[in-house]
Image 1: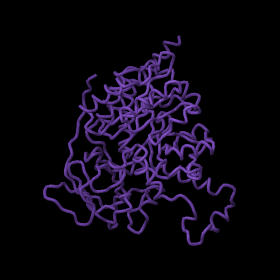
Image 2 (image 1 turned 90 degrees about the vertical axis):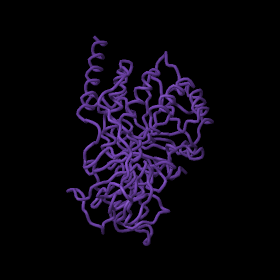
Image 3 (image 1 turned 45 degrees about the vertical axis):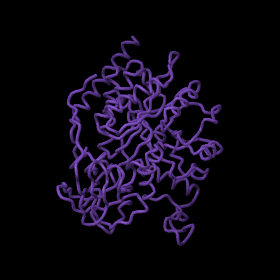
Image 4 (image 1 turned 30 degrees about the vertical axis):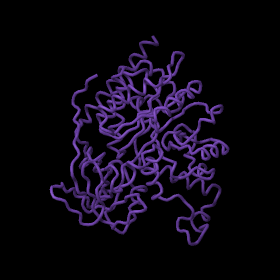
Length: 446
């Protein structure tokens, strides 16, 4: 399936000048206002008064510069169901559309979702592609990710049903071969498993191929021996403490769903419950889950997770106890989750969950240049150096403040506008697939 209007962008040499830089790397000491040198897709240096001949200087004044957000679990294929369901029964009922998809529909849906991700400052996503019918669909979603320029994990998964064929070595080899030739080093593979009967074989195939992650949406009660650090366990409300402790003991990574779990009434993201039961903070990331019922908003996601932890921490306490009675007079956080921790969760933690911590997630020299610049002179922000930059981002930030997005040294958004893509064409193609699928479903039901 050939696509037109795709503009692959090159990697340049840039100096981001005078921004408030949050590297998310605790080993780096940098002045509050400093520069970042990017060349060849790599962060070369972070510091004051950087200069190199021939570099394009990008004015980062009145900007907060942070690593791009990393998302760890997203059913991108159903992004085009917007406006069709508001709850869990409605959402799962729409899975009747999955057999009606063409490869072009998969392409349109994933490109639409990935473009929204970039616009929101998400530079890495996990495409949880659990409705693929075969290699043609696999490659359509791979192509969609590649055409947007986002860094991604393509989680291969087959649509359920009596004729479901599990992902095997040949499927992995075909997708990997395409990515080796066309993926520009930005996309790798995982497996997502939605059937306990085939999960063991799919996990075996994934591990034999050296894939970094396995994503189960299946009953694991008889498969505990499989659990390991390559597993990503998503959602979490209502999970028994004993199972959380098992996940912690096996090093399983966690993907919280701060937009969708409250939406369907499942509960708030249980971050403190995971932590209290032994899961390491650095093994917890954030997930979009589905964007057919929610928007892609990393800032709102961070606020929801932070506030959920605070609610859990203060459950049953009075207003006076919360506001006026610190647990430790010398602890100014009062034992609460803080904005800086939420930035960790949304950047380096997400990279760790995907096994990409050596590649992205911090603004460390030698890592790939995945970063965003967020305006502080918009009406909802404030361009003052005395404020805490993490407070501003998490407590006040909005997608509209994302000025610049860079992935692997390529600028994909600048001055608040997407680069190298016509958003109207992306939306029009997604809408066309939506209309076709709805019409086909109505015809099938007639």
